[in-house]
Image (cartoon, rainbow, N blue to C red; front, side, top):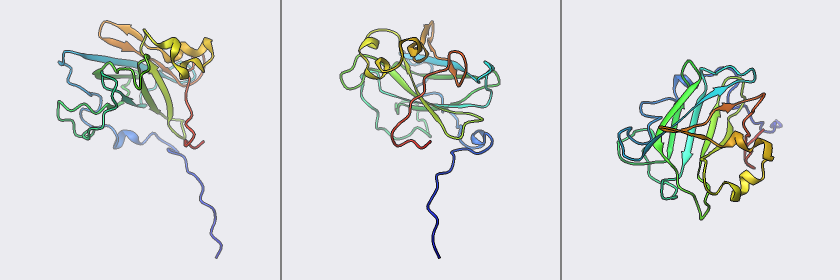
Amino acid sequence: MTQSPLVATPGQTIGPFFHFGLPYDGGAELVPAGRADAIRLTGIVYDGSGKPIPDALIEIWQAAPDGTVPRAEGSLHRDGWTFTGWGRCPTDRTGRYTFTTVAPGAVDGATARWFSIVVFARGLLNRLFTRCYLPGAGLDDDALLASVDADRRSTLIATADDDGYVFDIHLQGEGETVFLRFPAHLD
C-alpha cells in the first residue's frame, strides 16, 4: 500500500473553539495589578469591516523589564510573583483585550522595546503574529521596524495612556496591522 504524503492542516477550521479550553484564570495577569511597576496593555481587535471581534484570543510574549527573556515555568498556574513573560487573554463582547504586565526591556543590546503578539480569531485558518512596539527611544534603529514601509509602521506602535499602552489590532482593511511570517510558519 502506497502511503500519501502528509499534508498540513489548518490551526482552526471552523469556530472559534478556543474559548472552550484555552483561557484560564489569571491568563491576562502577568503581574498583580497592585505591583508598583504594573502597566496595562489593552486594545480592540477589529475585523476587515472595522467591527470589533468579540471572540478573538490574544497571546503576548515579552522580555522582563531588564531585557532578559524569562525562562521560569508557571504561566498556566500563576503564583503571584514569578514573571514568565507570557499571557493569554480572550477579547470581551466589545472586542477588547487587557493585560496587566510590566513594560518590557530592550533585548540583546537593542533599544526598542516590544511585545510579541499572537492573534487567534474566527475566519483565520492559522494564527497571526505581530509586534507591539512601545513609543520612545530606539524605534528608528530597530531592524524589523525599519523593514516595514514607512506609511505602515504606525500600525506596530502602541500609544501611551495613563495606565500603560493601547494597541488596537486591525485584521484587514484600512489601518491593517502589519503581520509577520516566520520561516517555519506554515501557510
